[in-house]
Amino acid sequence: MTEREWIRNRFILPGRKGRFLDIGAFDGVTDSLTHDLALAGWSGVCVEPDAETFCKLRETYAGNGAVSLINSAVTPHGGMMAFWKSTNDAQNSTASRLHAECCESRGIRFHKYTMATISPHVLLRNINGLRDLNFITIDAEGLTQEIVEMLPLQSMVGTEAICVEHPGDTAFLVSLLRPLYDIKLITDANIIAVRSGAAG
Image (cartoon, rainbow, N blue to C red; front, side, top):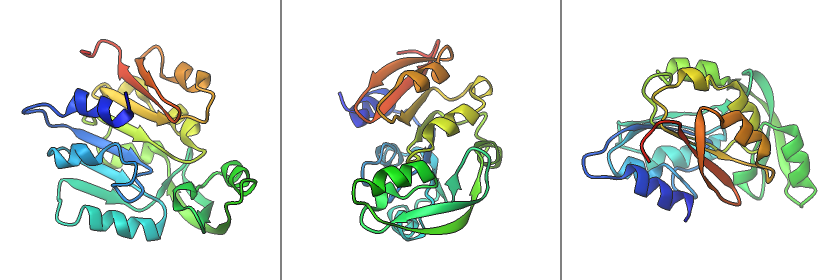
């Protein structure tokens, strides 16, 4: 089962509406795990750091007032940080120096500049994310683990499911999600977990 299939089976049900948060939304379509939810009438927040890609994200959701868009990187502590924009593979743009170096060893090239970033706490506070986010997906190219570490998962009682990109070794991310979340699906790219006690 793919991530999109799991999400459709779990959340796209007759009369079911909810709210999502997509950190690293890219253009809102390519490899998106929330686009189907938006098409099904969910509201949500998409966060994308790369300005050029953000323009495509705006086009994707033009006229959809239920989906809010934020042009920023999410980093563990926020503030001014270096950002590496990929010149030949926009999906690898990152605020992680280590991720950029790893990609450069595979032939991906970057332009480096400085940008303002926001922390998970600031983001959640500004979107009322502690109370009414049903689904969160995080694809932050090298920073996903650190972002998950900073999430106040204990307080996020409405977050029924979370999908996080993993770097290959899933053990650390699984340990962060448990005991609050039960692991439901691990693919070659992501972990999907459901809050303990939630149906299904």
